[in-house]
Amino acid sequence: MRRQRSIADIGKGTYNEHEVTAFITVYLMRSITIDELQGFRDALLELCVRVDLDGIPTLDIVGTGRRWEEHLQHSTLSCFIVAGTGQKLPSM
Image 1 (cartoon, rainbow, N blue to C red):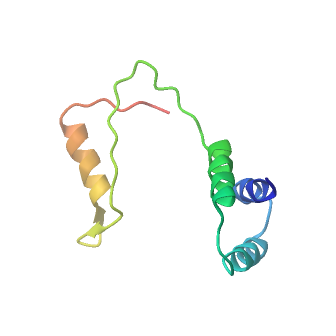
Image 2: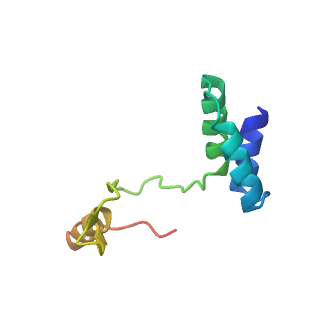
Image 3: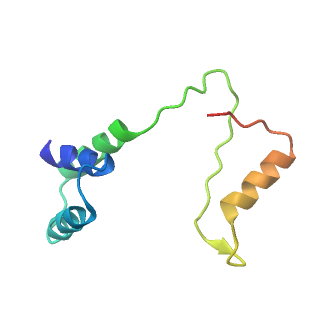
């Protein structure tokens, strides 16, 4: 539970960059447990911004992170194609 709190606090900006670096350095010097992974998941869920899309038809656009011509990401190009078909995007 303490690690979950630590990750949530990191996400909220409680610690400076040096403290975060020290935490991650020490943390990665050993094996990660299932309980810790579950705690990290819970912390990330706590930090997420929930968007109510009830009743709005949506499309999931997921990119690979790879760049095309070093200027345009695949996910960006996918969004342009979807928008060109008239698909409406929810406003946030």
